[in-house]
Image 1 (spheres, rainbow, N blue to C red):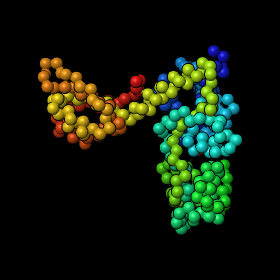
Image 2 (cartoon, rainbow, N blue to C red):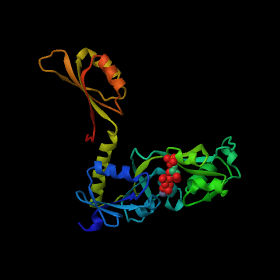
Image 3 (cartoon, protein in one colour):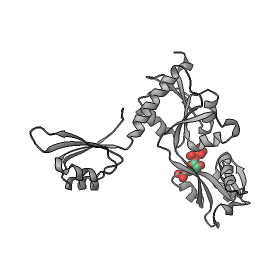
Length: 296
Ligand code: PRP
Ligand code: ZN
């Protein structure tokens, strides 16, 4: 294979999405060797390489065909696509279930706020001018959008803005800058992005393979496989204590009529309290197993 027949994925070099993204690819069975400058990762098993770049550059790299896929926050994708010139260039292939955060408007802690109207005539600093303008436009609020390239959270203290519109995850940055969140403009998470038209060559098969594997990883993320033994008559009560679990598989136990081995996939954690409740419902020999991947 010549290099450009290999699939190339753009990934954030350093930031909130970098490590979870590399972890996801690792769980999809992709292994990489990093170049000396650390910007390129050569895929060792599958024909997939990574380019490590600034997240804001990722949509453009895909639109130009430098990369085939990219992992970015929905905020970055939407800001790019909100430009009329970029509207139909990219497509969202799959939400990835990590990197949850929101693009929010925040004002100084002591500032009065009584809804979007309060922003009229105010200067709002952001690195997401198109999303902010759209949000303001939908509410017919005339505010001044101050576009910055970073360090948005200090603008109110510097006196260059009255409010900000920025990403909030834990809220630590806002608190540290005496700001309070007043409006959510967009809920975001990491998404897999591609050009509007997917490559029609061998790379397309690799994309399909990757999508199946990502699905297999994200579908069972945080799930647990529960194994236990019980009298058949107790199964209904046990399942009632397991909301969201898949329909159980029941195996007849050899030489023990009326006794079954139960197996069920449960979403999220299975805590001690829940296990104890299941035990009271008649279960014994309980095992909780982590689930790594799934192939339907
Ligand atoms: C965002 C945002 C804040 C911080 C908020 O930056 O600009 O600085 O994260 O997170 P918190 O609520 O957990 O404190 P990010 O790290 O995404 O970098 P970027 O916007 O420059 O890409
Ligand atoms: Zn960024």
